[in-house]
Image 1 (cartoon, rainbow, N blue to C red):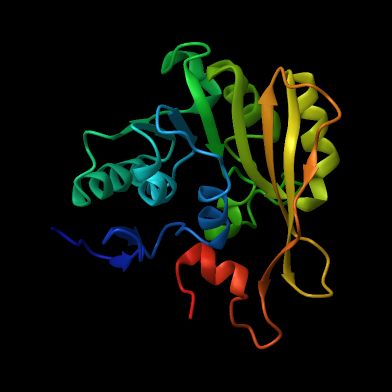
Image 2: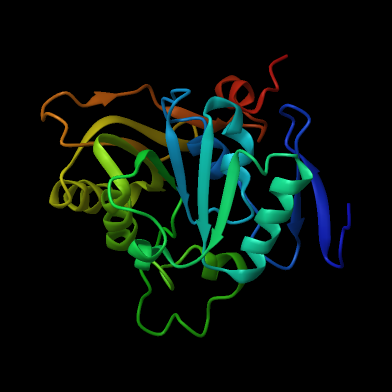
Amino acid sequence: MNIRENERLDDLMMSGRKIIQNDKEFCFATDSVLIAHFPKFKRNFKVLDLGTGTGVIPLLTADEVDKYFAIELNHDAAELAKRNVELNNLSEKISVTEGDYRHIRDFFSAESFDLVIANPPYYPIKAGEVNKLIGVAKARHEFTATLEDVVTAARFVLKYHGSFCMIHSATRLCEIIDALHRHQFEPKRLQMIYPKKNRDANLVMIDAIVGGHAGSLKILPPLVIHEDDGSYTADVKKIYGLED
């Protein structure tokens, strides 16, 4: 195992898996872990992770399905994702493609997946922001893919009645549902995420089905991330596998 300059090796605390990350690039955060555990997996599912970064979502959930695919635009992140797959001896299960999912037709066939997962950039770019944003802030803004782009890509590759699970900014929920409806998705499960009790929701997870029937949306209990002292809540500890 070759750890290069500015890289570190983190323990995923699951099945002995580890992940190499670069301190100079965007590293995964709690939102990636949350959306990784949100879908309803089935063993025979063929799954695609849109914008995989360094591959954390497939690494966390590879045991749930027989075959996992991932696509990542950033060259350095895609290379790290491939190394992480090899590091964890998952090359036969996880396939990483370097590419732009705005051109999804160049990489995957129409209606060929059962489940798509995405943790896309959350925020539109405002006038004057382009040259001010760096690092993590830049990764969180829609420089390379918009909400419309990610929903379009998911719809192209998903089978009829396939599932699309996404985490996004709660402030854009109306836009999200509008985009989903325009692409033949019907939301089926929705969960609001709160940084602490008595704070406004900052994230939302949504599971939408291609061609699903309207009127059966399930609103899940709210998920609170931190206690008042900054520690993780019991719900989040359970997701991380850190139960007392």
